Picture 1 (cartoon, rainbow, N blue to C red):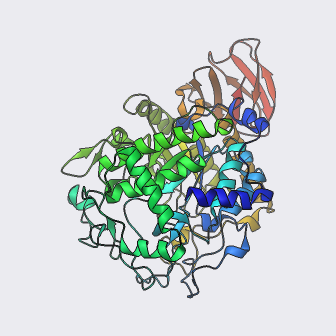
Picture 2 (cartoon, rainbow, N blue to C red):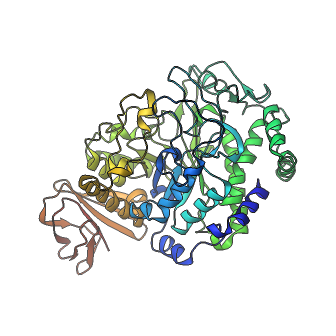
Picture 3 (tube, rainbow, N blue to C red):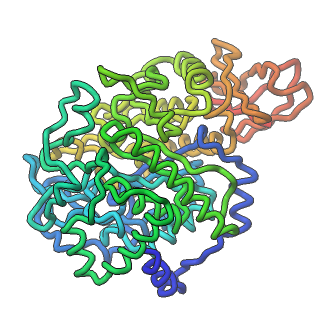
Length: 547
């Protein structure tokens, strides 16, 4: 893999495959805007559905069957993400981390499980962990994306799957039985029936619990030999196992393949799929090897290092909510995944909590994050690629969605199109396909879309610059009008919501001292603190005050 990357970088030198990020960009994004994972503003997109940066890679592996509605490839790729980073789309939105769906090589054929022909456009049906899917781009495209993101101070969360391969098709044979199980199906009666099983029919489950030393699966060996890279890959594997002392078990092969992307490209963290369906020990091993790989990359690329932030692991533990605090209950046992490799878990509960008023949400999250989850965090979202019951499926509350998501303690996750009212109800679709339409770039010139996007941008930029929003301590200053403060180290802010338009007086408590000039980020107006209060005259009902 490493040799291929070097060759591609040399080949693509004229197209910007460089090694050093802009010093100006690094200073702007890391010194002026201190980064804290617990306060991050993450943007998540399905790679295939976001932006088509290279139409030449839209058809590969003879994927020519007619797919069901929104169940085929549509052209989005890594080059498209890079293009939008360069255009400043994410900078304007206040995004400082991007998570995109998996881009490794997917099964070549389609499946039909009662929903019509479905291709692996979503990226969760891996065929080969060692190279990129041609529909998503090349190693050079991945390198360019990583470099461009880092130049903008944006971290990259690589979406990784260790639980299963892709479905079995005529073009995609099942792996050897010392690598995968094809049954029984998961019943979720206890932990074992959620781990030692297959998620759905025809989705082979990796034997991550196996301690048996195994050779590579036959289909992968045949594939590598046909591609002329078997010897090179085998040498890398031998070097890895010799260096680490790990046994050649199925999970350790995959750990090697996944951590290669950290060591070679500087991936900042993982978003880990299907957490509860893999043994905790495997996640600890993945985290340990990823930390080593991240240190190796930093040592080899000192001029490209953004800061001393450690490698980060975010888990998709389906059904977990912040009320669970540190534990997930399988029925027969409770597991603390925060103590088993994870810094953060996706909070499936936020969409329900978001139905409450601001203070009930903010105070609750502040309390839990600074007690039971101190040093850890949760990632909140209002919609996603596989949640069929999001907070606002009809997109009737897009402003409220933004305000609650981006001002709630914890990590915020914007799902592509949340900020532009991309429709989540698409006629003719089945299942989660309705959540996965192409990004609605064609609506960007619409006046209502522009106004909404501006709201998301102002809140996002404020959040990005002030880690106090996501990681700080919360205090209500006034119930009516609703005003609160957040404090994180020396970062202090005061926020007012549902205020009257025009002239309004805001109490700043002791956040700012008398005589100090503060700025309202939302309107751009400034004011001087007098008797613990400021007066802002603006057309908006929101005030975002900072020094």
